[in-house]
Image 1 (cartoon, rainbow, N blue to C red):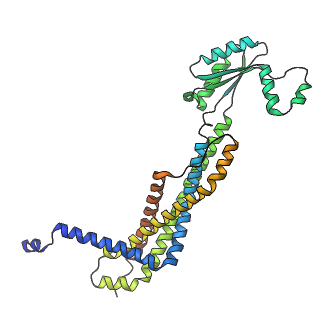
Image 2 (cartoon, rainbow, N blue to C red; image 1 turned 180 degrees about the vertical axis):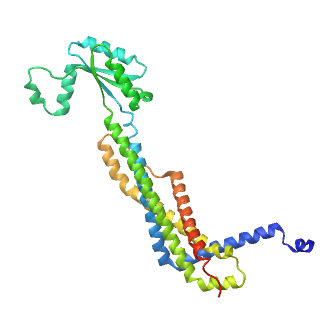
Image 3 (cartoon, rainbow, N blue to C red; image 1 turned 90 degrees about the horizontal axis):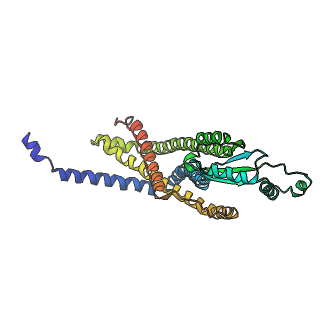
Length: 318
C-alpha cells in the first residue's frame, strides 16, 4: 500500500494532466467544427434564429415598457360639479381637493374653459356655434400622487371626492391604463412561452447534431473503449462540441438582434419625434447579452449531454 502511494503522481501533476486533457478536448472539438464549415454554419444559423426570436421579442417588450413608462402613472379623475356651482366656488372646491393627502394636482375647468377645449380638439366649432347654451359641465381634473395611482387607491379617492358638496360624479380615467397593463402582461407571458418552446428546439438541434457526430465516429469510439478509454474521456469532446455550438449560436443571435436594432432605430426615432419625444430603442445591455450567451451555452451543453448520455452507452466494442 505504501509503495502504491509512493508511485502515485503528485496532485499538481494529476491536476495538470486533467487540465491538458480538457484543453485538448476543447481544441479538438473546435477543430471538428472548423473542418465541417457548411454543416456547422447551418446548425449555428438554426440555433441563432431560435435564440434571436425570443430575444428580439423580449427587447421589444422592454422598449414598449420604457416608452409607456410615463403612461402608467397617468391615472386621472374627472370630478364633475353641479350646474349651481359658480366659478369662484369651483376654484375653492379645487383648493379643498388639492389639500387632500392623496391628491398631487387639482385643476379647475370652468364651463367656458371646457367648451373652448372641446372646440379646439373636436373640430366641431361651427356646429357648437349653433347651440343656444353651453352643454358642458364644469369639472376639476384631479391627478393622484404616484403612491395612490393603483386601481384600488384611485377608486377609494373617487368615492371620497363624490362625498364632497357640489360634486355630482368622479369619473376614473384609467381604464386604458389597465388595458395597457393587461396587454403587456399577456405579451410577457407569450414571450416566455415562445422562449421555452424555442429553447427546447435548440436542445433538440444540438442533441441531434451531437448524435450524428457520435454515429459517424462509432468505430473510433469502439477502438477507444477497447484500449481502455473511460466514458468520461470519450464524452468530453462531444460536450465541448455542444458548448461551442451554443456559444457561437449565441454570438450570432446577438449579431442578428443588434442588426435589427440598427435598422429599426432610425424609423422609431422619426416616429417618436413626431410625438415630441426623444425616445430611442434600447439594446440588451451587458447583462442582457451575458444572459443570452449563458443561456445559449447552457442549452448547448444540455443538448450534448442528453445525446451523449443516451447514445454512448449503446456503443460497446464487439
